[in-house]
Structure formats: structure tokens, C-alpha cells
Image (cartoon, rainbow, N blue to C red; front, side, top):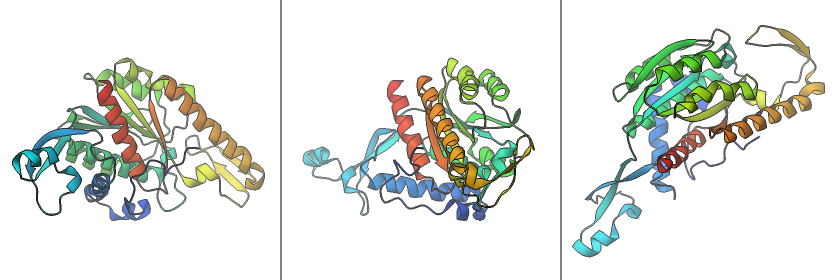
Length: 305
């Protein structure tokens, strides 16, 4: 199982996702998390990831001295700071799984609420980069669709506010329809708990890859799904099918953890073969790992293009 905290920005501090979920205002949450993340990024050695130099402006007290153009200072005897902007404007769409299994949560926040916050933060981050943002929610069909546009950030946040998890889900048919809808190639971010066989998931994403889209997958899991911390014997319900299965956790725990490791490992291997970027997210963890993973992936994608 990949370490969820790896790759986080040094010194970045983020509020517990459970606390964020209680705020109830996605725009406020997204702005607070992303602004804090960007400030941490600027303080870290990674400043400049996914952004290019745009212009100079005069230095003002409080600016990071590492952004001072010392060569220009040598020529002019004045302090100027380098400003940056996005590599290029791109179409960016979050594709959010709102199937019934996403409603599960063992520690005060469901997978769906965590995914909603993540989607809002990514949308706000991308909007700051002047990219066109869009949004799709799906279960076994497309539930909500907001086409990518430079003016759609508020629309995406509004739709994110109202999505709920209620029906069983499948990836193949919704993603096939999306591949037909998305004309101009862009960046597609799938946020899901990926409750299907690895090869089925990769096959479902194949039409998007075939049409030239860059695909990034965030695999959202609850801590109980990763570690199986249940103690008492009881019946466990499959949230997708409603089927119930009696389980004695002590006897089943290690086998379950091995199955999860195998599932994640198989996904990682198949996604790597298909050139799809893949990150596992634990809903108990802050969001800096996800945001940094997106930025570094975006930087690589822009270099390739």
C-alpha cells in the first residue's frame, strides 16, 4: 500500500478533513486549503512546479527573496520579483463517482464528502491556473455534467454541493459516454473508490486515453477499508448490491488486508502500463498529498506536450 503522506509539501499545515466537512461551504474550504497549499509550495524547494515565468514586478516587503531576479538587479540596481503563470490553458474535468459505496465513512467523514472537498480544491487550484474547469458526477450513468469553461468554477462548486450517493455504480458506460462528449482533449481526473476489477477499470478508461486525454486517478479509501479495524463479529453489507455476509473480523482481517494490497498493486501496475497516473488517498489524511500529486503530474504532462 503506498504511503499516503509521501510527497507532501514540507511545512504545509492543513485542517483535518473531518473539520473541513463540517464547514459546509465548499468555496471557503477550497480557497483556504489551496491558498495554504500554495503558500507552503512557495516556501518549499518545489516552487514553480507546473507554472512558468510570466513577467517581473517590483519587490515589496514580505516577498520570497528566492523569487528576486538577481541578474536583473545586477543590471538595474533595483529589486524585481519573478511572476509565474500556468504553462498553458487546458480543459480540466473532475469525474466524481457518486455510487452508493462512496457514502461509507468510519471516522466522521464519508468517502463522498472527502471526494467532494478534493474535487472543490482541485477545481479552485486549476481555476487559479486559468484553465477551463468542468465536472461530471456518475454512478451507473451520468448524473451531472458541467462542460469545461473558464467561467464554470462557481457552477462546479454549486453542483458539488448537491451531489449525493444513492445508486449502485459502474464505470464502463458513463466513461464511454464522456469520451464521446469531450471533444477537445484535456486533463480528466477520476475520483472513485474503484470497486471493480482492475482490468475492468482500465478498460473503462481506455476510450478517454484513446481520444488523447490525460487521465489522473485518485483512489479514495476509508481507513477501515485499508486496515479492517473492525473487532466484533457481525454482518457486513455490500453497499452496492445490498448483499449481507456474516464475518468474524479476527479470522478474516489479514486475508482482507492482503486482498486490498493485491487490488491496489494490480491497479498500479495496469495504470502504469496504460500511462494513467494513480494515487491512493486515505480519507483520514490531509489533502496536500493529492494537490502536490496533481501539480507534479500536470508539470510532467505539459513537458510531454
